[in-house]
Structure formats: C-alpha cells, structure tokens
Length: 379
Ligand code: ASP
Ligand code: MG
Image 1 (cartoon, protein in one colour):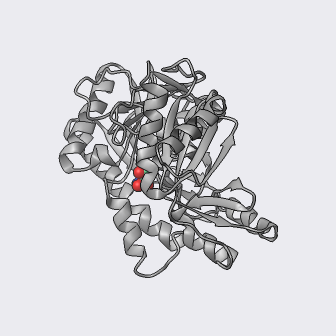
Image 2 (cartoon, helix red, strand yellow):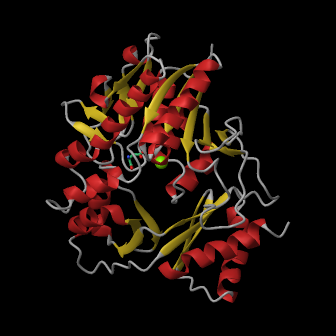
C-alpha cells in the first residue's frame, strides 16, 4: 500500500465548501487504496489578516508573540478539515506542531525544522491532519516557518514518514515557465529539477516555498505540484525530480519576477550584520559592488540592523530572473532585447543557474512578458 502526503494551500481551503472539496480529494486517495497524511495551510487571506493585527502593536514581523498570533490560522484549518473528514465517516485527527512535535530552531518568523517525531503520524487508526507552517522550539515556544511554510511542513513530514510521494495541491495545476496569471502563454513544465525549482522559488515563484524545495532536494523527496480545482484529478501536474524536461532547446526552465524587494547599499563594515540576519534566515542577496537586495517583508529588521544611514534604499525595483542551466548563454541577447524595448536595465547579476535583471518596479511585468515571448514563443 502506498503512503502519500497531501498538502492543501490556503486557496484550496478558502471557504467552508472548499473544505468539502478537499475532503473528497482525500477520500478519493483513500478509496484508491492509499494511506495518507495531510498538511493544511490557513484559509486564504487569514495569515495576512493576522500579520496586520500584529502591526497594531509592533513594527517587527519577527518575534515570539508574532508567531503565537500568525500560526493560529493553521489551527483552524486542521480542525475544520478533520471535522469535514469525520462527517464523511473518515476517522481523522488534527495535530498542531507542538503536539507532534515538529521541533524547530529557536528562530522566530523564518524558522527551520530540526526534528519531527513520527509516532502520531503513522498510527493507522486515523488520518493525521497536520497544521502546516508551525513548529515548537526546544524551549517550548511556538515558531513559524516563513511565508508559504506549509510546503516545508509537508516535505519534511513526507521525508520522516518515508512517504512514496508528496503532493502539493494549489490553485494552479503545476509549475509554469512564468506565472500564468501574468504571462498569457506561460507553459506548464512536466518535470523540473530540484536545483532549478529551488532557483525559481528563491527568486519569487510563489508556487513552492524555497525552504521546502531545499528539504526535498536534500532528502530526495518526490514532489508533485497539482491543482485542487481541476475537475480531472488524474492530471499529472509537475514533478520535481532530478531532471528538467525543457520546453525549448535553450535549457531555460522558467522566468520569475520578484517585485516585493528593495535594494540598498552595505559597506564591508556591515558584514557581521549580514551574518546575523542570515542566522535569522533573513536572506540578503548581493547584486554588485556594495549593492544588495532583500524582501520588503524584512525591511524593518534590515534597516534597523544597518542603521538606515547612507544605505541608498531603492524601493523602485523589480527583479526578473531567468532560470535554467542555459541562462548565462543568452544573457547578452536578453539585455539587448530589453533595451530595444525601452526597458531601463538598472543592473544585472547571475548565479550558476540564473541570470537576473533589475528594472524599475513599473516595468517588471512588461519585461517578463517581453522575455517570455523571446525565449518561449518563437518555436
Ligand atoms: N499560512 C501561511 C502563509 O500564508 C503558510 C502557508 O500558507 O504555507 O504564508
Ligand atoms: Mg503556498
């Protein structure tokens, strides 16, 4: 009998009736003879509301009490989903991170899972319905795993219970060459490598949380992204595995854009600060010379740490990332193409698997569409 982990994101449980739909998908898997463990996110919009509530009292998004508040949405979802399953005659039990326990580092807001006890998750007398996104530190404090962190819960659970596969149910039916909500002709990939998926996720693809892909890559967890909205639940979605099935000969997996970031200057005296931020799992990425960028989510913490002075904060940026092992081969053509289309190129930088272009915020959507047409539609 196969054992699978099913993860349902916020859009899959957006309303009470959507819980019924999720329960029927779970019922389908059980009916097909599979054992399942379920991970669920907060109802759509709820985590944002909880974050907003904290803003009444504090500017920081990182702290013990913030996590006590923002982890609460998942508790509601796991309880409701267990009730929806029981209503169908399926024995189910909800579990919070601390009950299992899912132990994490002693970091708030962006914590990482260090250990999961599997006893309660492999008891075959019920379907475990696990709250995503939350854990408990060694000292007993509730922690959260960063935005989108239910994916990390699901992948880590799949590893620990040795599941055959981890299915991530979302509102798109796979990983696309670009966000299909922005780029009309974006195409679905049948498979993508862990490394390229990680690069897409780090660079703003919202379909999977980067930390979750990192866990999947480390432990070779078989991951699949699919839609909970599709009428045909047998559609294949996208598999995250060792190799990408490229759409074109130029070996580009996809293009992302990240418009929730800001850039700033750091001097070499700031190095210990970058190290401290990274020990809190706050990513600060080097662009060129003394120029860095980070997610606006952590702007307050970063500007506090660097004292805000002479830091030349630029909020007017969007970063386009072309991801794939062929990304550097086309970098010159990409820049030329943008310049001839009157897109302002503020900067470029690259990693082993990506080429990134910094453009003005307002031009990011245009740029991604131009580049997607250039790289994917001339076939
Ligand atoms: N509810 C959390 C968030 O909105 C975690 C998740 O959805 O994965 O970020
Ligand atoms: Mg998500």
